[in-house]
Figure: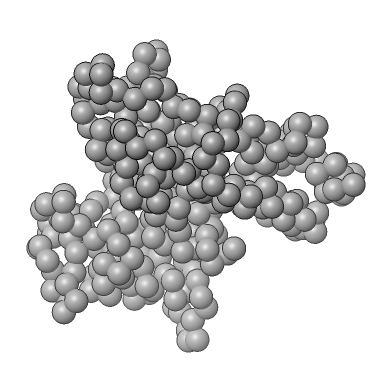
Length: 346
Protein backbone atom coordinates (compact mmCIF):
# COMPACT_ATOMS: atom_id res chain seq x y z
CA UNK A 1 0.00 0.00 0.00
CA UNK A 2 1.15 3.54 -0.71
CA UNK A 3 1.61 6.31 1.85
CA UNK A 4 -1.60 7.89 0.54
CA UNK A 5 -3.57 4.84 1.61
CA UNK A 6 -1.60 4.39 4.85
CA UNK A 7 -1.55 8.05 5.88
CA UNK A 8 -4.01 7.72 8.78
CA UNK A 9 -2.25 4.63 10.16
CA UNK A 10 1.25 6.10 9.80
CA UNK A 11 0.36 9.40 11.49
CA UNK A 12 -1.50 8.18 14.56
CA UNK A 13 1.31 9.51 16.73
CA UNK A 14 -0.45 12.88 16.52
CA UNK A 15 -3.72 12.34 18.37
CA UNK A 16 -4.83 15.95 18.75
CA UNK A 17 -4.47 17.35 15.26
CA UNK A 18 -4.27 21.00 14.23
CA UNK A 19 -6.74 22.57 11.82
CA UNK A 20 -4.05 22.53 9.14
CA UNK A 21 -3.32 18.83 9.63
CA UNK A 22 -7.03 18.02 9.52
CA UNK A 23 -7.25 19.85 6.18
CA UNK A 24 -4.33 17.75 4.92
CA UNK A 25 -6.04 14.58 6.19
CA UNK A 26 -9.17 15.42 4.20
CA UNK A 27 -7.26 16.07 0.98
CA UNK A 28 -5.23 12.86 1.40
CA UNK A 29 -8.46 10.89 1.88
CA UNK A 30 -9.88 12.37 -1.32
CA UNK A 31 -6.64 11.55 -3.15
CA UNK A 32 -6.72 7.97 -1.80
CA UNK A 33 -10.32 7.36 -2.85
CA UNK A 34 -10.54 9.35 -6.08
CA UNK A 35 -6.96 9.40 -7.36
CA UNK A 36 -5.09 12.49 -8.53
CA UNK A 37 -8.34 13.92 -9.86
CA UNK A 38 -9.23 15.87 -13.00
CA UNK A 39 -6.33 18.11 -13.87
CA UNK A 40 -4.44 16.56 -10.92
CA UNK A 41 -6.59 18.77 -8.69
CA UNK A 42 -6.57 16.27 -5.81
CA UNK A 43 -2.79 15.94 -5.95
CA UNK A 44 -2.40 19.72 -5.99
CA UNK A 45 -4.72 20.03 -2.98
CA UNK A 46 -2.51 17.61 -1.03
CA UNK A 47 0.60 19.53 -2.11
CA UNK A 48 -0.94 22.86 -1.00
CA UNK A 49 -2.22 21.58 2.34
CA UNK A 50 1.04 19.78 3.09
CA UNK A 51 3.04 22.98 2.49
CA UNK A 52 0.66 25.07 4.61
CA UNK A 53 0.64 22.57 7.50
CA UNK A 54 4.41 22.05 7.50
CA UNK A 55 5.04 25.79 7.70
CA UNK A 56 2.25 26.58 10.17
CA UNK A 57 2.73 23.73 12.68
CA UNK A 58 6.36 22.60 12.56
CA UNK A 59 6.03 20.76 15.89
CA UNK A 60 3.47 18.38 14.37
CA UNK A 61 5.61 17.92 11.28
CA UNK A 62 8.58 17.02 13.49
CA UNK A 63 6.59 14.15 15.04
CA UNK A 64 5.65 12.55 11.70
CA UNK A 65 8.43 13.76 9.42
CA UNK A 66 9.03 10.42 7.70
CA UNK A 67 5.47 9.80 6.45
CA UNK A 68 5.05 13.50 5.60
CA UNK A 69 8.19 13.52 3.46
CA UNK A 70 7.12 10.25 1.85
CA UNK A 71 3.74 11.77 1.03
CA UNK A 72 5.42 14.82 -0.50
CA UNK A 73 7.57 12.58 -2.70
CA UNK A 74 4.50 10.70 -3.95
CA UNK A 75 2.62 13.91 -4.73
CA UNK A 76 5.64 15.33 -6.54
CA UNK A 77 5.51 12.44 -9.00
CA UNK A 78 2.03 13.52 -10.08
CA UNK A 79 3.14 17.15 -10.03
CA UNK A 80 6.14 16.58 -12.28
CA UNK A 81 4.08 14.47 -14.67
CA UNK A 82 2.34 17.69 -15.64
CA UNK A 83 5.46 18.73 -17.54
CA UNK A 84 4.28 16.53 -20.41
CA UNK A 85 2.63 18.66 -23.14
CA UNK A 86 -1.11 18.12 -23.06
CA UNK A 87 -2.14 19.56 -26.41
CA UNK A 88 -4.96 17.46 -27.80
CA UNK A 89 -5.90 15.99 -24.42
CA UNK A 90 -9.55 16.50 -23.56
CA UNK A 91 -9.88 17.54 -19.91
CA UNK A 92 -13.29 17.75 -18.24
CA UNK A 93 -14.73 18.86 -14.91
CA UNK A 94 -11.69 20.93 -13.95
CA UNK A 95 -12.41 23.67 -11.42
CA UNK A 96 -10.33 26.30 -9.64
CA UNK A 97 -8.09 25.00 -6.85
CA UNK A 98 -6.65 27.41 -4.28
CA UNK A 99 -8.42 30.55 -5.54
CA UNK A 100 -11.81 31.94 -6.62
CA UNK A 101 -12.40 32.53 -10.32
CA UNK A 102 -14.92 34.94 -11.83
CA UNK A 103 -15.60 35.85 -15.46
CA UNK A 104 -17.69 38.57 -17.12
CA UNK A 105 -21.34 37.89 -16.41
CA UNK A 106 -20.66 36.40 -12.97
CA UNK A 107 -22.23 38.28 -10.08
CA UNK A 108 -18.86 38.82 -8.36
CA UNK A 109 -16.89 39.79 -11.47
CA UNK A 110 -15.06 43.13 -11.06
CA UNK A 111 -14.63 44.81 -14.45
CA UNK A 112 -12.67 47.61 -12.75
CA UNK A 113 -13.95 50.18 -15.21
CA UNK A 114 -12.27 48.60 -18.24
CA UNK A 115 -14.23 48.47 -21.50
CA UNK A 116 -15.27 45.11 -22.91
CA UNK A 117 -13.96 44.27 -26.35
CA UNK A 118 -16.41 44.05 -29.26
CA UNK A 119 -18.21 40.71 -29.30
CA UNK A 120 -16.38 39.48 -32.41
CA UNK A 121 -13.00 40.00 -30.71
CA UNK A 122 -13.78 38.12 -27.52
CA UNK A 123 -12.38 34.73 -26.59
CA UNK A 124 -14.61 31.90 -25.37
CA UNK A 125 -14.77 30.87 -21.72
CA UNK A 126 -11.63 29.40 -20.19
CA UNK A 127 -11.13 25.78 -21.17
CA UNK A 128 -10.41 23.01 -18.62
CA UNK A 129 -6.80 23.03 -19.84
CA UNK A 130 -6.50 26.77 -19.18
CA UNK A 131 -8.05 26.41 -15.72
CA UNK A 132 -5.60 23.60 -15.03
CA UNK A 133 -2.79 25.99 -15.96
CA UNK A 134 -4.16 28.54 -13.49
CA UNK A 135 -4.40 25.84 -10.82
CA UNK A 136 -0.78 24.93 -11.23
CA UNK A 137 0.38 28.54 -11.27
CA UNK A 138 -1.43 29.28 -8.01
CA UNK A 139 -0.01 26.12 -6.40
CA UNK A 140 3.51 27.01 -7.49
CA UNK A 141 3.13 30.57 -6.19
CA UNK A 142 2.21 29.22 -2.76
CA UNK A 143 5.17 26.81 -2.89
CA UNK A 144 7.54 29.64 -3.88
CA UNK A 145 6.46 32.15 -1.24
CA UNK A 146 6.48 29.39 1.40
CA UNK A 147 10.09 28.52 0.52
CA UNK A 148 11.06 32.20 0.54
CA UNK A 149 9.36 32.81 3.88
CA UNK A 150 10.98 29.75 5.46
CA UNK A 151 14.45 30.86 4.37
CA UNK A 152 13.78 34.39 5.64
CA UNK A 153 12.69 33.14 9.07
CA UNK A 154 16.21 31.80 9.56
CA UNK A 155 18.03 34.72 7.93
CA UNK A 156 16.10 37.49 9.72
CA UNK A 157 16.86 35.92 13.10
CA UNK A 158 20.58 36.61 12.61
CA UNK A 159 22.37 39.79 13.62
CA UNK A 160 24.89 39.38 10.82
CA UNK A 161 25.85 36.94 8.09
CA UNK A 162 29.20 35.31 8.75
CA UNK A 163 31.17 33.76 5.87
CA UNK A 164 31.00 31.31 4.32
CA UNK A 165 27.41 32.21 3.45
CA UNK A 166 24.86 29.45 2.96
CA UNK A 167 23.14 29.18 -0.44
CA UNK A 168 20.02 30.84 1.03
CA UNK A 169 22.09 33.68 2.50
CA UNK A 170 23.83 34.22 -0.84
CA UNK A 171 20.41 34.37 -2.45
CA UNK A 172 19.32 37.01 0.04
CA UNK A 173 22.37 39.17 -0.65
CA UNK A 174 21.86 38.76 -4.41
CA UNK A 175 18.31 40.08 -4.33
CA UNK A 176 18.14 42.31 -1.23
CA UNK A 177 21.70 43.56 -0.88
CA UNK A 178 24.13 43.88 2.01
CA UNK A 179 22.72 42.32 5.15
CA UNK A 180 21.01 44.51 7.70
CA UNK A 181 18.77 42.81 10.26
CA UNK A 182 16.09 45.50 10.18
CA UNK A 183 15.83 45.20 6.40
CA UNK A 184 15.83 41.39 6.62
CA UNK A 185 12.95 41.51 9.10
CA UNK A 186 11.05 43.76 6.68
CA UNK A 187 11.59 41.24 3.86
CA UNK A 188 10.38 38.45 6.16
CA UNK A 189 7.29 40.47 7.07
CA UNK A 190 6.50 40.97 3.40
CA UNK A 191 6.87 37.27 2.59
CA UNK A 192 4.64 36.44 5.56
CA UNK A 193 2.06 38.75 3.99
CA UNK A 194 2.43 37.08 0.59
CA UNK A 195 2.07 33.65 2.17
CA UNK A 196 -1.13 34.66 3.93
CA UNK A 197 -2.56 36.04 0.68
CA UNK A 198 -1.73 32.82 -1.20
CA UNK A 199 -3.02 30.46 1.53
CA UNK A 200 -6.48 29.39 2.61
CA UNK A 201 -9.08 30.43 0.05
CA UNK A 202 -6.32 32.15 -1.88
CA UNK A 203 -6.73 35.18 -4.14
CA UNK A 204 -9.70 36.15 -6.29
CA UNK A 205 -8.85 35.87 -9.97
CA UNK A 206 -10.84 37.69 -12.63
CA UNK A 207 -10.81 36.41 -16.21
CA UNK A 208 -10.04 39.80 -17.78
CA UNK A 209 -9.03 38.57 -21.24
CA UNK A 210 -11.95 40.19 -23.05
CA UNK A 211 -11.37 43.75 -21.87
CA UNK A 212 -9.29 46.43 -23.56
CA UNK A 213 -6.82 46.20 -20.67
CA UNK A 214 -6.68 42.42 -20.49
CA UNK A 215 -6.18 42.01 -24.24
CA UNK A 216 -2.47 42.84 -23.85
CA UNK A 217 -1.97 42.13 -20.16
CA UNK A 218 -0.34 39.21 -18.33
CA UNK A 219 -1.74 39.88 -14.85
CA UNK A 220 -2.27 42.87 -12.63
CA UNK A 221 -2.98 43.80 -9.01
CA UNK A 222 -3.91 47.21 -7.68
CA UNK A 223 -1.20 48.66 -5.48
CA UNK A 224 -2.32 48.48 -1.89
CA UNK A 225 -2.25 46.47 1.33
CA UNK A 226 -4.83 43.75 0.72
CA UNK A 227 -4.22 40.27 2.18
CA UNK A 228 -7.60 38.55 2.37
CA UNK A 229 -9.40 38.34 -0.98
CA UNK A 230 -6.54 39.83 -2.96
CA UNK A 231 -7.79 40.58 -6.48
CA UNK A 232 -5.78 39.59 -9.55
CA UNK A 233 -6.91 40.53 -13.04
CA UNK A 234 -5.63 37.89 -15.48
CA UNK A 235 -5.12 38.82 -19.12
CA UNK A 236 -4.44 37.00 -22.37
CA UNK A 237 -0.66 37.04 -22.11
CA UNK A 238 -0.75 34.59 -19.19
CA UNK A 239 -2.26 31.97 -21.47
CA UNK A 240 -0.39 33.06 -24.59
CA UNK A 241 2.87 32.03 -22.92
CA UNK A 242 1.93 28.44 -23.67
CA UNK A 243 1.53 29.08 -27.39
CA UNK A 244 4.02 29.02 -30.24
CA UNK A 245 6.88 27.48 -28.23
CA UNK A 246 6.67 30.12 -25.54
CA UNK A 247 6.48 33.13 -27.87
CA UNK A 248 3.63 35.55 -27.55
CA UNK A 249 0.61 34.08 -29.25
CA UNK A 250 -2.47 35.60 -30.85
CA UNK A 251 -6.17 34.92 -31.03
CA UNK A 252 -5.84 32.84 -34.21
CA UNK A 253 -2.95 30.66 -33.00
CA UNK A 254 -4.56 27.25 -32.53
CA UNK A 255 -1.32 25.33 -31.95
CA UNK A 256 -1.65 25.31 -28.19
CA UNK A 257 1.05 23.57 -26.18
CA UNK A 258 0.23 24.12 -22.52
CA UNK A 259 3.20 22.77 -20.59
CA UNK A 260 3.73 23.41 -16.92
CA UNK A 261 3.65 27.01 -15.88
CA UNK A 262 7.16 28.44 -16.10
CA UNK A 263 9.32 29.99 -13.41
CA UNK A 264 8.79 33.33 -15.18
CA UNK A 265 5.04 32.88 -14.74
CA UNK A 266 5.41 32.31 -11.00
CA UNK A 267 7.84 35.21 -10.63
CA UNK A 268 5.46 37.56 -12.43
CA UNK A 269 2.51 36.55 -10.26
CA UNK A 270 4.51 37.03 -7.05
CA UNK A 271 5.64 40.41 -8.47
CA UNK A 272 2.01 41.48 -9.00
CA UNK A 273 0.88 40.13 -5.64
CA UNK A 274 3.66 42.18 -4.01
CA UNK A 275 2.06 45.31 -5.44
CA UNK A 276 -1.31 44.28 -4.06
CA UNK A 277 -0.36 43.00 -0.61
CA UNK A 278 2.31 45.39 0.67
CA UNK A 279 2.29 48.19 -1.92
CA UNK A 280 5.62 47.27 -3.51
CA UNK A 281 6.84 49.63 -6.22
CA UNK A 282 8.56 49.23 -9.58
CA UNK A 283 12.01 50.73 -9.08
CA UNK A 284 14.02 52.00 -12.05
CA UNK A 285 16.83 49.83 -13.43
CA UNK A 286 20.51 50.30 -12.69
CA UNK A 287 22.98 50.40 -15.56
CA UNK A 288 26.00 48.08 -15.71
CA UNK A 289 28.20 50.92 -14.56
CA UNK A 290 26.12 51.38 -11.43
CA UNK A 291 24.19 54.51 -12.46
CA UNK A 292 20.41 54.85 -12.33
CA UNK A 293 18.79 54.64 -15.76
CA UNK A 294 16.12 56.98 -14.38
CA UNK A 295 16.28 58.74 -11.03
CA UNK A 296 13.87 57.07 -8.56
CA UNK A 297 11.31 58.92 -6.49
CA UNK A 298 13.16 60.16 -3.42
CA UNK A 299 10.43 58.97 -1.04
CA UNK A 300 9.29 55.63 -2.50
CA UNK A 301 12.12 54.47 -4.82
CA UNK A 302 9.55 54.10 -7.62
CA UNK A 303 10.48 54.64 -11.25
CA UNK A 304 9.07 57.83 -12.81
CA UNK A 305 8.16 55.74 -15.89
CA UNK A 306 6.21 52.51 -15.31
CA UNK A 307 7.59 51.09 -18.56
CA UNK A 308 11.18 51.52 -17.32
CA UNK A 309 11.64 49.28 -14.30
CA UNK A 310 13.93 46.74 -12.70
CA UNK A 311 12.23 43.51 -13.76
CA UNK A 312 14.79 40.82 -14.62
CA UNK A 313 17.09 38.79 -12.34
CA UNK A 314 20.17 40.67 -13.60
CA UNK A 315 18.59 44.09 -13.10
CA UNK A 316 17.22 43.14 -9.67
CA UNK A 317 20.68 42.04 -8.53
CA UNK A 318 22.19 45.33 -9.73
CA UNK A 319 19.48 47.18 -7.82
CA UNK A 320 20.26 45.22 -4.64
CA UNK A 321 23.97 45.93 -5.00
CA UNK A 322 23.47 49.65 -5.54
CA UNK A 323 20.63 50.37 -3.12
CA UNK A 324 19.29 47.68 -0.75
CA UNK A 325 16.62 50.10 0.48
CA UNK A 326 15.16 50.15 -3.03
CA UNK A 327 15.53 46.38 -3.47
CA UNK A 328 13.37 45.59 -0.42
CA UNK A 329 10.46 47.59 -1.85
CA UNK A 330 10.82 46.53 -5.51
CA UNK A 331 8.14 44.03 -6.52
CA UNK A 332 10.32 42.07 -8.91
CA UNK A 333 13.01 41.34 -6.32
CA UNK A 334 10.37 39.43 -4.35
CA UNK A 335 9.21 37.55 -7.44
CA UNK A 336 12.72 36.50 -8.46
CA UNK A 337 13.79 35.62 -4.90
CA UNK A 338 10.69 33.45 -4.42
CA UNK A 339 11.32 31.51 -7.64
CA UNK A 340 14.99 31.00 -6.76
CA UNK A 341 14.08 29.94 -3.19
CA UNK A 342 11.67 27.30 -4.47
CA UNK A 343 14.34 25.92 -6.80
CA UNK A 344 16.91 25.92 -4.00
CA UNK A 345 14.62 24.08 -1.61
CA UNK A 346 13.70 21.55 -4.29
